[in-house]
Length: 388
Picture 1 (spheres, rainbow, N blue to C red):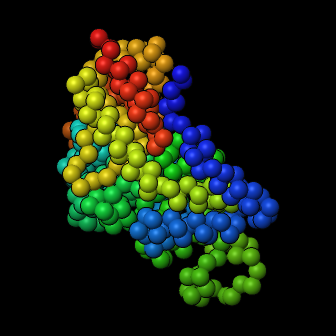
Picture 2: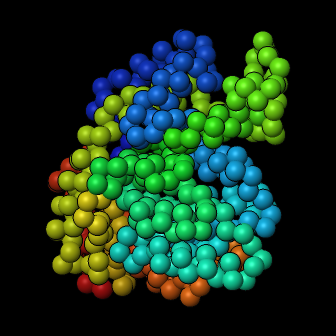
Picture 3: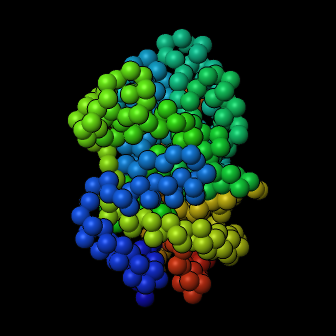
């Protein structure tokens, strides 16, 4: 029996032709870029994510850069990001000439530590070379960052807050989505994500009408939008993209991907429940056999994009599981601040000791909404049989 790390085909089969029908409708409809399904998906996504506005875009990385461009982030600005994350979170900052400041994470949630963030901001201010402007908090492995505490830091220092929910879209704190605290929430619909399409895609969510229009303009080559006309621009009777009001980019969501996501969003709340049931069972069965199982603070709900444990002999366990036919993944073996492209950028006060410990002990096991108990038992038995 082959065990899938993430079984996307099981979900497709469970949906019983709904996705294939949606794709066919999009194909025959003929509006293959930013067609009517995109607008429908944006409305439904905003409702699900408790936001006033949602804008689809080409991928989760573009979703992160759009608000930074809209806010005018540039050289001399500091953007605070965790190092224990995928490259996309950090790479968009130097694109604009700004400086990423790497902040350590909480040892339990693996998300940005608000205390370390406060110290990092204070150190940047004391040095006086950079201006703190934005915090990008990552919902790593599916659970929300400590947004109430991080938002408080942002408010004290006049900074914007982005929730990078590429992995965690759908996570909540006491029933509230990150947009309650963040200026912008971003989502990735890369196929491996819990809410993934069959190619690439992303979205930005916000409650700010002016910001939403600005990002809408930016994602389509700086096109003219309603706020431009209100500000005194002459009426334009042609396709808005033929009047550029700002330097933009090309980051549109394909209609076919939106059609797929409409169908997947219908079942997403139920899938989050299934993922939480699977994770709880994993925790119960694996706790005696590993250094640590995932810990989610009371009142928080993770979407369990990954199920990640700690083991002091992580590499030995990975080899053992591979021999047993159990796939694993290591996120992230080299944190950003230790990678060649980012080593020149500053670290927060006190360094990143938690991040540097985690890189050697974390390992992710198979996790998806269709993981049955029999398969899960095989994964658990394989972990339990490791003698190292």
